[in-house]
Length: 582
Image (cartoon, rainbow, N blue to C red; front, top):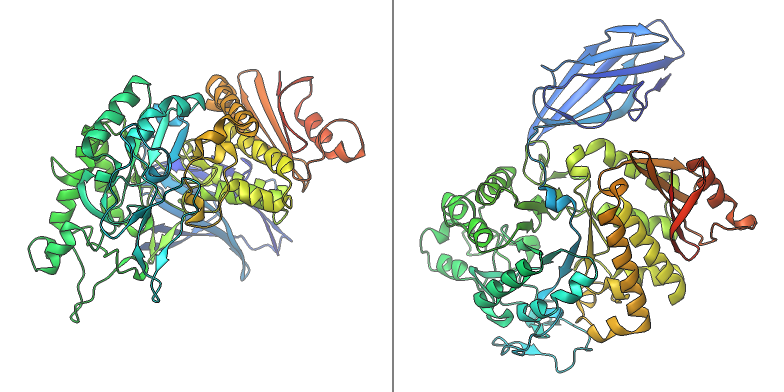
């Protein structure tokens, strides 16, 4: 028995995509062969720890399609509604899912237009005041060209932290460079007092690390960014603190309320993040911790927004309880109505399950957005040939269906981050070390990144083809001299051009997206607004789109999208072509 149902086709699902609570959704299915038995719709609603199963009879049949109506009363509660069809003892399997969300939690308008530049603070630039003195038991490299490394003992634990000495003043002194790329928003990895160079082991949420210049350097950076019309996003690490934090030290002495912030065992050990003893986990919903970090009038979340930050990126969002995220979101937007809150999420955030809980990031309003690692993974898989154009198109189409529309337009599409190998190194591997082809691939990647729905993020150095493998190699010091080389200058110019196009083209910022089926090797889509369209075509073989037998697929994709002529906006070697058509 075959169940025919396409959730992306309005004939089978009306309306398509995510819906607000209280909506009406009509589902239709064709069952072949028709055995005279009417099918049944099965629905499972998932929301946090709730799981409810339903069976629904059809409401009618027309033109061979059985119709099921999910009434507003049925979809009155937020959650993800997975559904399938059964008939005569056979089951279709999951045929689709509907994200039902509470409205009113849209990302601020400025964020949807933003271009984010991510900086690892120790590794970008040293200000005019020079480097701060190293922390006790750590060291600072003599050369900015040194390769970072972890110095560990036989147990694999870091025993001496390495620093390059980057400062917030150094970032402030180079805002002109960041602005020249077209970026208007800077996201900083953690800046608060810590022992390590990455600062995910917070020692004091109330103060900026002295090696970065302290609180005064933060205020100066914010003021100078305001003068440039730029915004700052901070990294919030609230699922754990550092072992050397002032909070954990008090907890070890049994002092209240700090002793209740952590989960100690009878033998004196404690819960820690992924077994890392330097990172003791906290009880996020413990009232005093919740007040200190989120709900109090002078909470950490509110205090730093008040000091000039425009939002928070939340580290390991899937480690934070939904109730904590909900209160943090409320606290942030109550303090600053146009603040943004987004989470570190590595998978589809609408169907994320962590620790047995179906997360409600977007169904109940906990995050505006998330780090969109699947975007990067899909494009890399396409370029390397492990996924076809059809497969990544299906994945991207699924995102458009599953995320609330505002979230879909706010997803953070990254070149990379401090947690993954450098994009240029990955692309070099795909083209077997050919730098010219790798640069063309990087241009094509950025062309997609800046014309796709969502908010682009560039990890510092990716704009000049910085290289690096896994952590810590992906955290090398920024090579400012390379920005003026012929390669660096050309790549910066390309990125600035993509940023300018995105900023000025209504097809990109406001337009709809339509994916174009052009076979397994050509990824293509159209962005349209009013009577104008922008079409992107990417060929994973880099064969180009001109004359010749090898370019036939690319030409056919263009011809299918452009009924009239077109003007070429940008071409990335043979890999990518961007055109505007009326």
